[in-house]
Structures are given as C-alpha cells and as structure tokens.
Length: 249
Image (cartoon, rainbow, N blue to C red):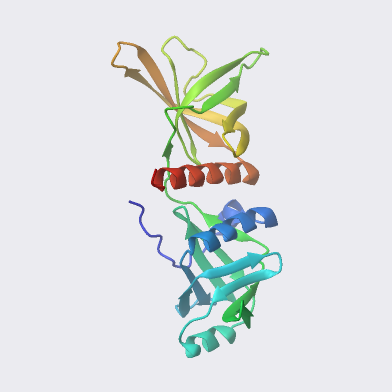
C-alpha cells in the first residue's frame, strides 16, 4: 500500500533547485493534468508560513489553474492577501511544489474557485527510492544495448523498471554487462507510450539459479542523465501499468 506524501513545504538548496526544477510547459502540464484527473490533495500555503488550505485542482490549461475554494471564507481571504503562495501536492509518490503569485477569486462552471497563473516552473521532488515496477511476464520489456565497437546489439530482458533504473537478466555466459561500466544509446520500447533512449550504468551483478537448472545473471542498472522527456515517458508507463493492474478484470 502506498503511503501518503506529507504536504509540507520543502526548502531547497541552489543545487536541489536546479536538479528538481521542470520548466517545459508540456511537462508541467502533464503533472497538473494528473492532479486534476486523480483529484489529488493540494496544500496551498500563504508564503512560507504554516497558514494553508487543503484543496483540489479543478482545471488546468495554458492560461492558469482553477482550485476549489475553502469552505471557510476567512481562510480564502487570508490567502488572497498574500502576494506569494506555495502549491504542494504529490503524484505517484513524488512531491510536486511550485511558487505562485497572488491568487484571485474566480468561477468554474458556475462554482466559486481560486485562480492561479500557470506556473513557469515546477519542482518534482524525488529524494526517496523510486517506485520500482515489476515488468510484465507476458510480452516482456527488452533493453537493446549497442555493442561498443560493432554495429550489432544485445537484447536483455527487463525484470523491473523505475525512474532510477532497470533490473536486467542475461545468461551466465553473457560477458557484455559488467559492474561499473556504462552503456550509451540504450533503447527501451514502452508499449503505447514511446521509445526511451538513454545511458545505463551497471551497479551490481548477481547470479541466479532457475527451477529448471539454468543459471542467469541479474544486472542492477542505474539510468544516467535522463532528460525530462525520457522521465515523462517513464512516468507515463509506470502510471499506466499501475492503473491497469488496479482496474478490475
């Protein structure tokens, strides 16, 4: 069972600010639309104080965001007096946070709402271990790894995948994967999502014995330097697989 992410403001160092900041409107919109779809809880803080309301995001488009007003009009007025608000929520066990300017009163489909301008940037705060998804047994995922000095390539079966890396299986005789080595231009085709391209680094190699007597090796690999577009593809795949597994047959 997934644990709720505490909706507390996180103060970032300058290094963390650069590392976790997303600035592409398309990527920001992807996370905001998921908050709308899932009716995710949102804490809207007045500046960096402890004064906040719990709300939900009703709609998001290129012009801005519409949030549910508090049932307490005094809480709404306290927020409206602030020139700087902090929006905190979570998506797929990852905290989302951004700073906004002044909120204004608005309506959406005839109902009262708070309006915020579309954020210029958003922080996707992933400090804890990534959620690791076990890859499907039927129609398994493969990681295509080019040979360094040849036009040939090697395909390894993916056992699990996350935003942090992949677990690969290979035969005992396979000498391609070695701990500490990096492999560039690796390709993973994510069904109905797209193709991910990136670099993997082998962190560990474990020998496994199968029930039929075969010996396999499991390579724990870490993604290196994935760009925002690749992370979006991964997040979409993980979210889609979680949704499919939770839906009743």
